[in-house]
Image 1 (cartoon, rainbow, N blue to C red):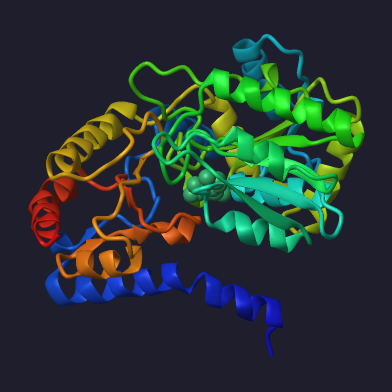
Image 2: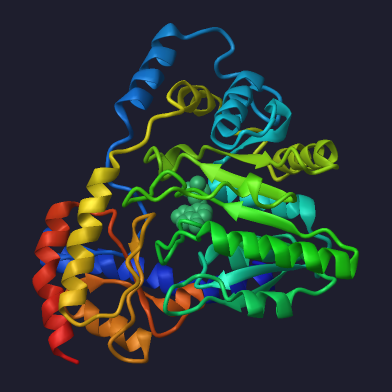
Length: 392
Ligand code: PLP
């Protein structure tokens, strides 16, 4: 019954499903507290108090029309507030007309890709990358082109980027802070990247969109300042969401912001709104648009993540793992202790450790740990990592 393409996609994404099922099986067998599940990027801290208060206020005030349709781009006052926040951070001049509210970053990326891509056009991603990108790009007839990162820093290999750009390149998709590595791209790297894109645009008489996927934007540690995409790339689209910064992945709320330097921004935004509508999202959830806008500056307690990162990272280094110290998001991406990351994942399972093999992110030989789990789980898991390391 189902389409061949979906059937093929299901095969490709079966690893994550299999891991989920394995986790459930183990929890039933040994009890949830003895399963150390680092496989999912599902934030465990509660959303910020400001957000919860905003939501309660809205529901209690119960203003007429709160649950009605609105402009498919979202409420103008919410979009205006987001534009003002971006302008305050960047010094740019975005208006509500540069903002489209979306169903999370996943919804936003699909809306952008549907709007941009002609069949067969290329989107460059850097390995390791968020595994869903392959499907998002495929959804809209695009071709994903993988460019490696430098393994010692997980910053993009710009020489390889330059060689990979063709007249078919429509977008370069970056994700910083990164899932799965937690790495934050430096301003220097991004400026060099912008120089390469501008050079290639001149060479091919094309326009290459820099598409920044930034759901982890507010989750940075060690006083790191995230470079401002809009001040580095003129042809930029930024996709953001509240899933991670406000621990709201189930609310499905995010937005697309389009650069005020794009000459064809009005046509692009018309396209985004059309795609948002016709992909069937229609508009982002109205109640959550309002509530997140009321608590726009609130962020989950980052200290919680920073503490977990420090404990886990230091433990792994002590055990002899090689790992780039992440400065953002809530992931670690250490090198597996054997070449075969699938075998390493199976071995970890024997110690009740659920980890995701690097090949799920286009980077075999590594594994991802999502440390958005309780501190108690992390502390309990430390002997299991020790036992695992002893085997190699
Ligand atoms: N992009 C990256 C890099 C992610 O890690 C995720 C979720 O894990 C998403 C996009 C999707 O986020 P959302 O829940 O906002 O759709």
